[in-house]
Amino acid sequence: MRSPKTVLVLATMNRGKAREIRKALIGLPVKVITLADAGIRTSYPEKGVSFKENAEGKSRFYSGKSRYLTLAEDSGLEIEALAGAPGIFSARFSGRRPTDEKNNQKVLRLMKNTPPAERRARFVCCMVLAMNGRTMKTVSGRVRGEIAFDKKGELGFGYDPIFFYRPLRKTFGELRPAEKNVVSHRGRALKKMKTFLREYLRRA
Image (cartoon, rainbow, N blue to C red; front, side, top):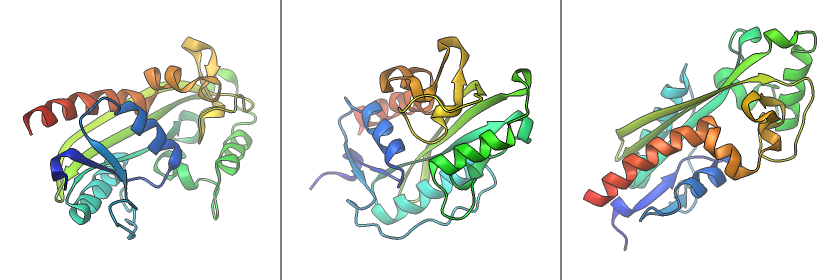
């Protein structure tokens, strides 16, 4: 049986997020497992008013049940012209039975008459590592961009097809995973978390 210090539970049901996190953690001496692998069927009721509160709540909750290192994150899109919306409601912005397509279409509809100079937005990610219900490390990552006028690209997930990243002149939906992970909010947070985990595991 592995030591609790060499197993890492990913506290997310989002396959796209899980895929990006798994790839970023390759090379660490740790076995990455899912909530299902850990035998956890209970869902955490997100009630936080910030990405940090939600990430910390999930991390503490699931680590208390798994007794393993548990990594949780909360992330989303903030649009200046929409007063920061969808924010922490990014995943369910389109209402009942939300999907990535519905969420994207709602944003494009709301931004339809917004001029280019006023389409500023940013992706935000807060990531929290916990064990036995106690927070061990909190990191965050942000990336600025603009809301495109139309969807572009079939890569990525979530709002990637409508998030235009000017330095590369592409939407996140047009970037290959390796390109996106270098500049994305989640990629930047994961770089910090990986540095912490590498040192922690070295001492464990």
